Length: 337
Image (cartoon, rainbow, N blue to C red; front, side, top):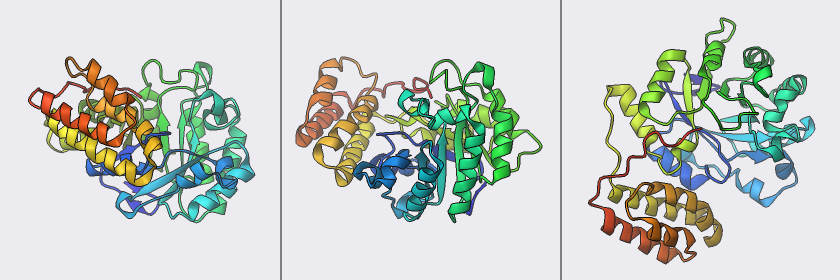
C-alpha cells in the first residue's frame, strides 16, 4: 500500500489518533508490537496557531515512530491552513484532517464530525490545505451525521477529487457516537467503488485478530485502523499480524509480561511528561493492562490512586509477584471502537 510517498506492507495496521492516549510513550509501545502507521493525538487548529503549549507539545515526533501523521481539527478554513503549515514544520509523513470526532464540544462547533453537516465547507477546507502544504493530506471521517444522511460513498469520491491521498472511515454515524455495531458494508462500498483509486482504511470494532482478517477479506479495505482496542492491549498489533501471516492465534501475554510492559510504558511516559500529568494519563492504561485479574479490586484502587511514581512501580512489582503465575486475563474482544 502506498500512502503519499510512504510505502507500507500489504494489509497495514494503523494506530488511531486518540486524545490523551496516543502520546509518544504509547506510540513507542505500539511500535514495539508492530503498528505500521501511527498518529499524534488530534490537535486543535486554534490551539496550534495561538501557540498553546499543550497543542504545540503534541507536534513532538521521533524518528523511531515513522511513518507518522499529525491530525488536525477545526472549523475555520484559514485557521486550519495556518495550523497545517505549522504542523508541516514538524516534518510528519502526512497531515490528517479530523472530520469524524463525535464529541459534542467539537462536532457542535462544526469541527470533527460536524463537518459532515457542511460538505461544501469540508471540501473547500480540504482543497485549501492540500494546496498550502507540500506533504500528503488524508482524511478520517464517518458514514454521515445520522442514519438519514449516510453519504460517505459520495463524500469519499469528492474528497478524492480534491486531492486527498487516502481516506479512513469509521463505520458509524456521528449520532451513534461509539454505540451499536460499526457498519462495514458502507466502508466496503467505498473501497469497491470503481471510481476510488486512493487507499481506503477501515475503522470500527476491530478488537481481535480474527475480526481484522474478516474485515480485510470481506470488504477488501487497504488497511485497518485500531483505536480503543489498543488501550491496555497494545500487543493486538502483533496478534493481528501473526494471524494474517500464519492463521495462528497467539496466546495472551502473561501477567509478568504485562507488568514488565506497564513499567516500560510508565518509564517512557515520565520521559515525555512531568510527574503528575504522566501519572494521570497512565491510569487508563495501567487499569486495562491488568483487567480481569481475580481478587484485584483493592490492588487496582491503590494502583489508580497513588501519585507517587515509586509506589506505583512497587505496586506493579507486587502484581507481577502476586499474579505472575496466573493465566493472563482473557481480554480479547472486550474493547470496541
